[in-house]
Image (cartoon, rainbow, N blue to C red; front, side, top):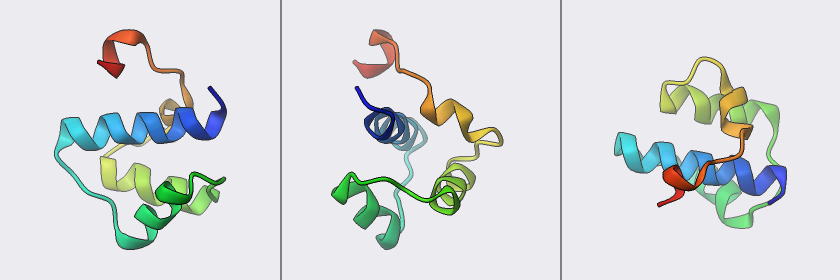
Length: 66
């Protein structure tokens, strides 16, 4: 799994568990699954209530994916 896929998988997990949705612009970036800017990463992390957004780039374990 590439870094972009890891990022979006983590974002999906946090969105689901925190019952949140992305903005229209963030959804466009997610649907394209292309690289995202650091600014977008920061905005998404803020929306998710994450101070250290490096965790969004850590590989998910099998427990979280299920």
